[in-house]
Length: 416
Ligand SMILES: *[C@@H]1O[C@H](CO)[C@@H](O)[C@H](O)[C@H]1NC(C)=O
Ligand SMILES: *[C@@H]1O[C@H](CO)[C@@H](O)[C@H](O)[C@H]1NC(C)=O
Image 1 (spheres, rainbow, N blue to C red):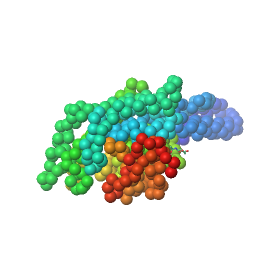
Image 2: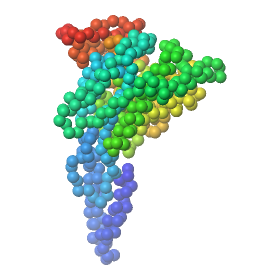
Image 3: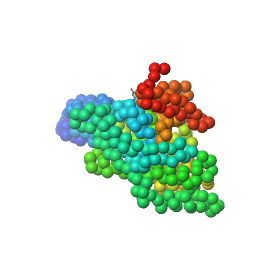
Image 4: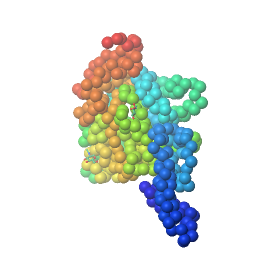
């Protein structure tokens, strides 16, 4: 659009420069025709870079075009991306890391996303209905991510993605968010019931569920801040960011520039809000999926950094009894704020990941829920999918009425 509005003035300027004395009206008309042609060619040339740019090229195009005076709108310096991981790294080495290598690092290799990782430096997790039987947390395993990145790119790659891994211990977390957590635990509404604790949602346990939500939100916020520090240090501007749990097994290929396994979106949508989007999974919608987001930097920033501030208004304007219920809060307060920036929230039908648990199990019914399923997952052989990624054989059992789990041992995978 900019081109179209700028163009007449350029034509005017050029035509002035070329104009001859008032005696040569005929020749002038021919010139106008020539000029009209010239203008059209110039316009096409100025659009050409967009047409032939590979959509996800991390570098500016290597072609050199002779540009007419009128330059095209400036492109963002270099399309760049960041993968951010958060949370408590349950069964990281067994389930999470092999799946990150297979379905995140390899699939985003061409995008060369930098990597940021925040985790809780704790030794074990207590049993808890919502997150399984508990168990040891092997935090040392997290450091293996650095080696994995080198393996994927090749040790001698001069341009390895930047990797930053940070953590909080329990007491560091408490000194940063302890008071806030106390407030969420204790504050009551006018009706005498808890304001923040979602007492309407029966699966929430007081006060553990509050604590776990605050821990998750803190980790999300912390890794975002680390990413911003990294961007400043590296003098980069990340156009696309993914927020990823560090306790899940990624069982479908993920590309940060795709909105499905067959649709790639360009990296150069920064100046075009209508085309800007964030992607989320299409299952476990309670009423929306809150487990992952990726895409537009600005959109993902709201999801990652504005929870604590927006919660205050949310608990006063949403149905009482849902307080800090994460999915309802996101649906009612966070996604609308993203959409207000002209950013679409789109569901990627092909994203699937299973929660890994600290006891060495993985929940394989996660992507086929009564509130949506990833494409093909109602009929998927999920056990085989898991076994193929970790190269080990597993036993299936029921965790509860709706959740199937796998326990996987150290035997190499049997041919089934
Ligand atoms: C991304 O989309 C392209 C099609 O544009 C497809 O070829 C590719 O396999 C997709 N990658 C992933 C990981 O979904
Ligand atoms: C989720 O948000 C939509 C509007 O985007 C609204 O219509 C719906 O009622 C919300 N669901 C819940 C459970 O709050």
